Length: 388
Image (cartoon, rainbow, N blue to C red; front, top):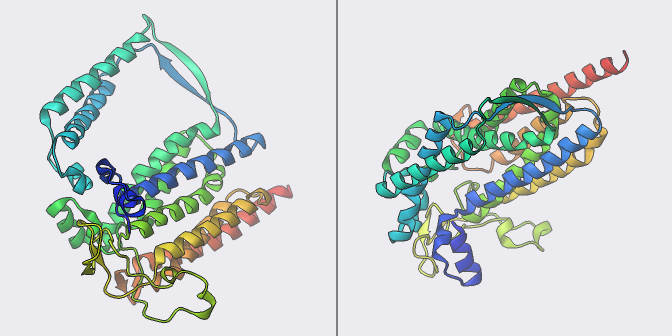
């Protein structure tokens, strides 16, 4: 396993590049997922615009106002945080070993933070006043559908992290709070953050954004739904490579005959050098900071979820052009995501809520029912509208 990009380069290529410890493997692949979703989403929105399904919108902006106090303040705060946290990385040893913990702590260079804050605040003030007019003007600008993707992605990132934390707290409140208060490290939670919470909050946040900007909600959801499956699958690549605890239950069964040509780790794996340092210590590990493997082999469920997510994304991407009624494609995504998680949940390590069900299984069942109901509703609605 490779907890960070540093461990990948050292373990796979024999290169010792210290600063790469600041790039967590899971975070890297989540970032790749967002980039991929953004690219495919933009492409689909352009297609729908060319078909006339989504129109260009107009927005009135005011130019020439000069620097606004709130903008300068926000830039100053960002500059303070960057200066406070960036400079110590080059002046203090060992911070790369627990980069996330350092970011979430109160440690840092206050003087560098003040200098960075003043610098970025002044830069914002200077740049804004370069375009200042004696009399500010109102201008109408056109915004094409795919140009909303920057905001959509940002809402997805913020909503995803916030929603994941919220649902993780609902699943394991005491453990999350104690882990955060102890070290700021929420990675110790069994199974990590709750992905469903992130997706739900991100979707709701974007629906609000679409409504506020008077955009066709169903068209945007149809265009972007399949890309969430792609991003999810890529994120699970990071889970598998880092060994973040999202693995399955013990699997001591012999590998089936139909898998004889596949690597053993696809059936059962002990996640050596996992990021949680869970299991028993390895005396032969090349890493001193992450040197544990699981005592028993388990199902590599992140790998299974990656495969399922890629297949389901491929299906949705292939059929998207043949689905003419709004709402059906997103309903299909809702059904697929519920089915995928329900299939994997029985062999995953999870906390049960009651009656033998986990939080994810309860949500999966709701999503399955909602997806089927959505497909039936939007198909019926589309048929009625097409016959008028």
